[in-house]
Length: 265
Image 1 (cartoon, rainbow, N blue to C red):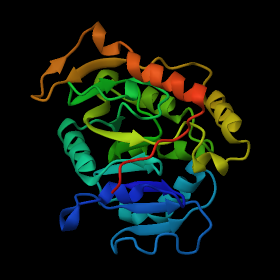
Image 2: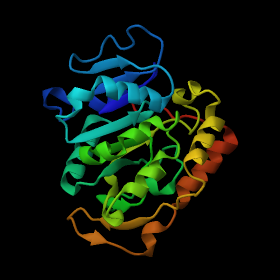
Image 3: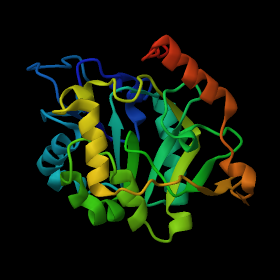
């Protein structure tokens, strides 16, 4: 797991309670200015200083880790405003190991700030096969990562890359997954995180990045859901939007609420 992190990162929650049996390694790609940003980090949590916007920084980080990456089956990237404790991430990796998608993400808890309704958790399901995985917290099977690796150098923000990755996923109906059994909390409004502070042009530049990749607007679709017993479920209701999160989103915009406080860890 590679966290793209600043000084106010929530990455400590990701390994909270793991003990000695943690099933994934954590590397922090730090974009801030402190010489020693996390002096209390665990001895096996590695760190590199990769200043600048998100994807150029991640690309620089990957170059430093190149030889090390060959020993992993999954490569997961997480933004620093994502809150999720270790048991959640353990469940997430167990599910992707079982389903073997090319690209997956944890669903977002219902109290999250969100852009796409499809990313919000549906607790009835273990996971859903979709045509979309967001660039906020995303996990590649290594063979698919090797296929799309050069896309990390296409722009600064990463906007539009999720659509590009979806276009390269085959077979389309059983390649991208959102894992409902392991939801995480997105704590900051889109465009308000520290990652946007280091993009020249800010949020407007991110929109331009997306337009440079494609002018088409992807319509996120759920092809099928996977029930806890492993059976597939399909039907038109899978693509119905959730009403209450939509109302909360509008209320937050009206009241200018741009962040939520995560649970203590």
